Length: 495
Figure 1 (cartoon, one colour):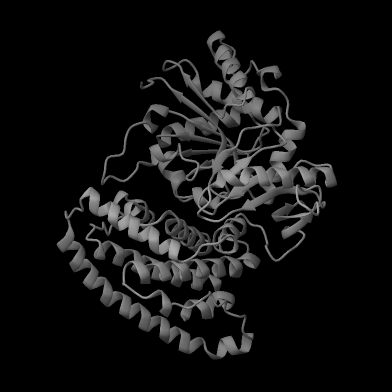
Figure 2 (cartoon, helix red, strand yellow; figure 1 turned 90 degrees about the vertical axis):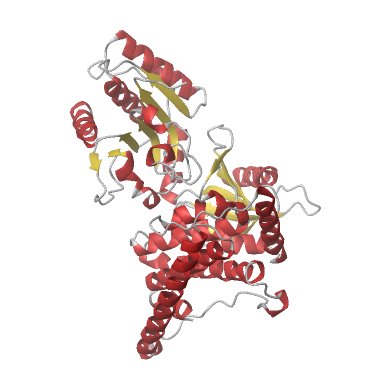
């Protein structure tokens, strides 16, 4: 097919074609199930609608989101050039399994007519690739023409089905059928690794083909087995040869939490061998958890794997970090008694292991200065290097950026608009909620150490059925804006 032909010669185009086919498939799921599809909504909104999620298995949804995110990264040129073919190949493997499920669950196909396994395309000779370029372009044009004709039919069906609703029992039956067909695909541990976990690792910038970065099935001793040996699913390595993290992968059907004990046994074995405590990830491909073992934190759910730089940064913070409450606040930033009390309460809360704090102070009492002082303490205590400040209006963004630059003159501060280009060396980003939403996927989940949410009352409230979730509400979700700690500030707290 077209996408297969482009995986190595033009992975960006391959990812675009893979996503295009997935979008067409998703539209057809809406049509077949008589769901209303808002054509003005974004693709991510189609995938996260309550109706769509109610009839599509979690494992299939995860594959769809993996394809979507990979295409975004490729299209916006965020992936390093050497990683683009691997990312496109992972997307192609994911699409292969999505289409198998679609064939069974929505086209009434027979499992016996499906190919037994994914046939990975091989890298062709460059001259041969050039020779078929014209034919491929024509194939693309033919495919786009067919998609355009199909879109007209879909538009008609969507209009006819607007307002149509399934009963609760019907939705349950559809979901049960979807789960059955997903299970029929036989997602085993090896396939989980190839389709889901590999994709997460690659998207975080790790080169799976470089054993100096990632090793699969790494041998370790000190295991509770007859031979005393075992094999770690993945070990992520620093450039100095020390293990940064272990990743334990289980079958989709197994709870991710069940992998924690095994992952810790492997981590302890690596600690004995190398003298360094690695961080721990464990996943079933659908849910992934992160354990900051060196920092003695409790496990928490994450939505990806940390990049090498983010793990290095976190290790430095664990090794060099001070007790926040013992770091004296800079009185030139905030010196009022109520401000110092707020700073003290927040730093003590973070020292205790909590990841979130709320400051409620009246308008005009210096909330921004308190936030800058806490950011300053975080930086001086080596608890983090990168901070994101979010507010609700451009005027507040501009004022906050000026305040950060005024009180922290030695720290790089950048205002972030919807048209900004990310400079990942910046220490403090200042943005509005809507503008940053356009860029969050370009940062790995470990990029920000502290996210400060100004006017936090704007981030509360329910999202009604049929409504798009607000950019203000999304900020709470680690799958949208990944951050180690969050500080909320408001003058009008809501109960």
